[in-house]
Image (cartoon, rainbow, N blue to C red; front, top):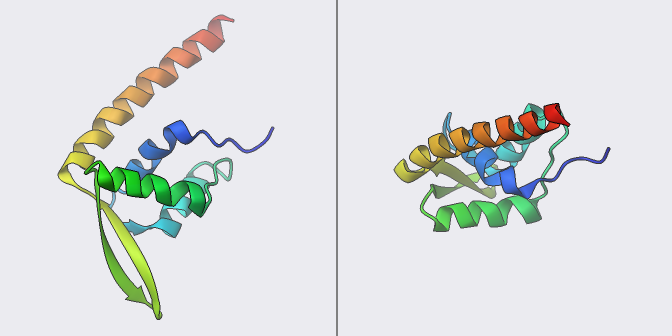
Length: 106
């Protein structure tokens, strides 16, 4: 089976990756890849537009820092982002339970 690339769950995974504190984009992708045991892997062309969208939606803030001579952008949850991650995790749990119920009944 090919690697799963369910972009519908990406915003939730990004928000969840930032619950413990701010991260740069590469670290977010690493957390997702490691947390999924390598099943989920997102490229820059998928991740960064979603980070920008979440920022535009007021769920993330960012700051720029120079690390080893390179610019790195760190993202963190805003107050609205902290509220959203709780709601979206509950929504995901309900969705997952519904899909599991359907699969079990087939």
